[in-house]
Length: 266
Ligand code: NAI
Image 1 (cartoon, helix red, strand yellow):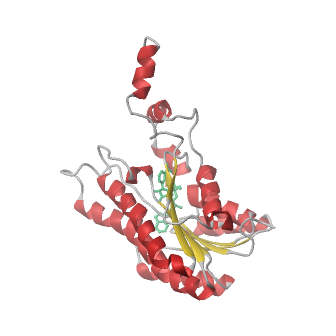
Image 2 (cartoon, rainbow, N blue to C red; image 1 turned 180 degrees about the vertical axis):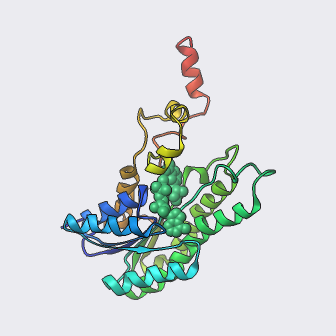
């Protein structure tokens, strides 16, 4: 018996990275999974791969910046597999060129990131919750980010949108808990997904490694396993929380790494 046996899950942004890992792990533990992604070919290939391994999955196109596309993905999930028990709102985008500091940020990019990263979470929930209410419950998981808990020199819109995800998670949990609908977030630190590996030079990875409490980087499955836990009944008394999966990067006084070097005479 799998840990999410018989549940149906919709995973947005499921063709790559964290979404792909989560979809695969959910399927491995018995869930029927709809993988919805802008990259429709990737979503279909991922579903095909799950089916080859004996799981149940379908891949569909999704543009998470459009309400009707999100509604279609929810409706497809219900019509194809009969229910939507788990919704993983995972789509998120970043832009290092235009999402800058407050004085220089491109305001259209601010709107785009709020729309794709934050409003898409609201919309996914808006369309899935009535189905979950009818079915007697469900589990919603939102991908936030450690950028939603901290400040930085750039990525103001990304950080604000992810902070919004953290608090929206609490609102959803507060409003629908009595319907046995749980809502939690997962806040990744740096995770070596294909996108991150492509964009982040080794010098930047070294900086991240320097401040991690653990001596290694995060992988997509570290988030996928957290999502699996939050989707399953193992977490049935957890709601409104955002679990930080970040290798202890943010737990210590920021100056600790430098004091350690000083103690070593460096
Ligand atoms: P990724 O780029 O590997 O995967 C994202 C997927 O979303 C892609 O398949 C892409 O086609 C899809 N997508 C993008 N825009 C879309 C749209 N408008 N509609 C439908 N699908 C769309 O990214 P990754 O790293 O797996 O990130 C997933 C989530 O994790 C995002 O919300 C991101 O902000 C968050 N995150 C990632 C971190 C990391 O270090 N990788 C750190 C913190 C948060």
